[in-house]
Length: 282
Image 1 (cartoon, rainbow, N blue to C red):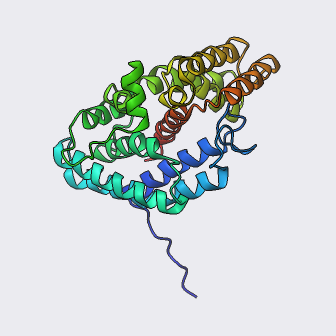
Image 2: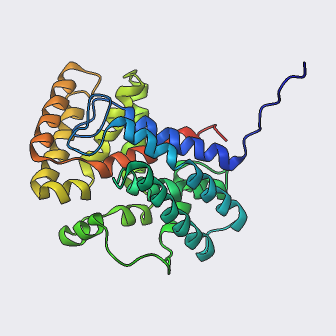
């Protein structure tokens, strides 16, 4: 009998795999404060971890198509930016069809879409600083075909003067580069365990992020509770310590009481995990 030859994955296939894996890993990470995880739905009445998985898997074709568009265009420019916008809007519709209208990953489509395209443009240059710089250059270009109505996040960003998802990308994902990734590596070096290291990375992002999801749900009171509570967990030794876990439980309790879910931080954790997985993967 002739042995079956496995289909060789293309670069676009591998990047789509990494993007979806990052979304699933973020969804599964537990215990996340007020976010959907393996324990339950957090502050969301319309979400659960199974729906997050289904949503992530529905986006695989979109990420692959974005990578293929970047390979075809070959450079940062308006043609690529507008192709990504079109593909992203189609991907969002596929996501909403899967989730029956629930917004599960709109912010992640923006962040991971840019990073996937940036990685496809130069797969030999996936260091975090170089990758996020290319993504920022794409984010700074204006998509002429983008719909004009402002998202909730954009409206909140304007109202509070916060840095929304668009500005975060245009600045080269500083919350990931300066907070998430350094904390992820630090906690690993301290032998915290992979899940605790990822939780610490999420918390590090939360300490400084003006999360528009939290602002939309709970205003500045919720934002201060998130930022100060996340810092308290890290100051107590992180999620791998008993004192840190107690602080994490308290933060979860506070954010649930305020109905404040740090969805923006969760999207950036997925971006952090995506960049981390790229190391050696291509």
